[in-house]
Image (cartoon, rainbow, N blue to C red):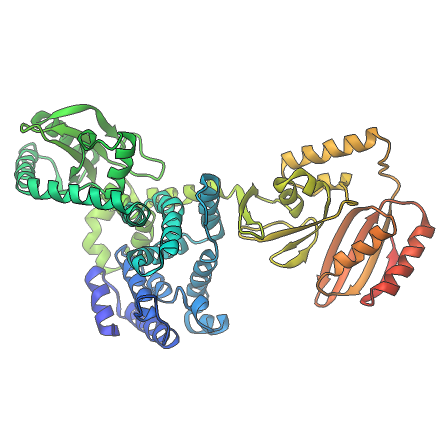
Length: 560
């Protein structure tokens, strides 16, 4: 695909300024150069996938910088390009989107586990300060799922499972229902192909049998709505998603006769009051089915979805579902939080002026204010927690502000009780280091290490504090723990991998218990502070001599 074809495709979807086109052409040429030679499993150029990702984003009416990031979303992972060059060419904003998408790609979901799936979704949301990153990742995943048939069966099932358990709920949480539905369908296609194709064939039969009938119903409904002076925007009919029918069938013992909403009408109106007026018209024309009515306008779904749903029986005895909503609700229901960015980017453009009646019904919905509040609320609860990784990739949920000690106790009480040191992202960190979303944490333990009362001032989790207090009470009751019998030493040494473990090993071999340890590094110099359980200065003197003899990196040892 050359740039002119790409440009014509995106401009048919959305309006972009000359400045936007210049940026997109630059991203196109840059990507074409650095992705050159890379192939996908079906032997097509890798660059094609990147362009389709950008086209997915264009369908959400998103801005040129988001599309540029979509074109380049895999460039850090798949090529040898430097981060510095990317920042120089496209600026910090686009670079940060690309880097965050790359980071998300490193998280893998291998086994079906509801808690892990929820934690992974929260981790993805939490590490992105910009929700556009999640939207780009979903656009990437959507194209990958559309071309999944070229991978081997094991990979198809793993990726489909991850899509169903992590990315479909993520899309729903962000309110991008159109993508969520397609992703769910595609995942089912590879996880249970027999059910997928069976339901697909049943839908096809119903469409063939009912297309003329649906057109007749649509004409009748539209005529009646106009007569009742409903401010109608449009009516349309559609078939229910395969995955949605599959989930209903599972609840109804796979009895197709129990599915009433294979076929559905959408009635899109101008005002909220017209939604309820339309509902009255539908119920006057057809008999409603009891327990098949939902008012999601008065009681929206958690992701903000709003609509009236009612299923009725026509004069010919056929069940049909009607969905009734305003234009603003329809916009938000289809593309979710992306509608906020679409609006924010377009409000000063000619495109905005053209679409103004949809976006500026301030007296009725105040769309931009509601969307921004809705976007912010998605993150409010999640940001009370952080999500970090074990070395094997398991996602662990902790309170915001947690330390490696909190992590150790969350894994297992005994790991916490014998905590010696920690590495975060393969680097030694002090015991009071505040963990960040996405950190990979590794704990070193020693049987000779045990909790200190000072640990209570370090940890964040109330559950962790309870475990430490419990240990200290047991120690005190056995008269083997004396908080006042300790000596602090400071060691200055040239930093190296494994330095803390090596020093701690020498301390333990001398029969001393480490009550507390702190490490700070400045360039290649490490400052290590230890609180040791002893009052015997002769023992400390012997320790100093052995440390200097056995560890050549040590520069100086001081008593505090």
